[in-house]
Length: 189
Image (tube, rainbow, N blue to C red; front, top):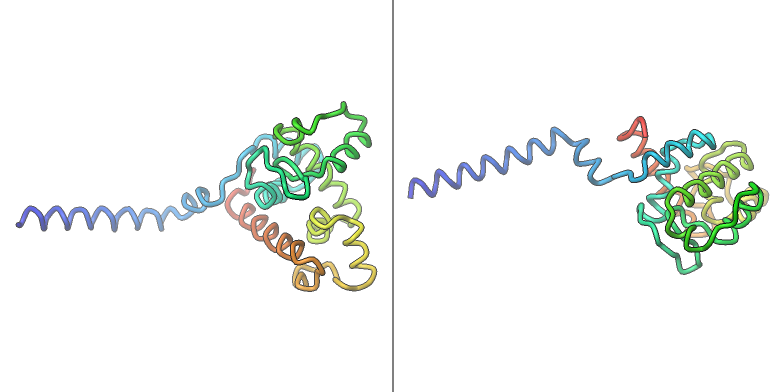
């Protein structure tokens, strides 16, 4: 009986010790909960297009959870969930070689490159306003411009509840959450 009690106490001590280590090493837990895949590609494209790598990672996390091959019910594909027509427009505008839908859907580097270019384009269109650009990435720049012109939404995060599309409201909140979380966990991506 004494051996069983000693084993139980030892097991309890080990479990408590393991839990304590997890709390002490909370960054380790956080990094497991908030992983960032494709760091090298994200870093390269962030430098190339002058877009914060944390923003790129946050968009990827919300759009596809870092899983290639994803396709939305509306037809957006890949890590950054680009619409094929948007990708074609980006390719034409940049005089890049034509790409296939399969490449857009399954090639992480290509998808991140085009998605990052598009983020830079939106940031340029909306005077480097991250919140408005995030909304435009989801709802389209035309819709967002209309909301701003008609004063439906003032473009601030604090008034995101005024965004007319529920999907875009939630999208902005999620991207901003992950953006801040990634900045905290990964000062250098």
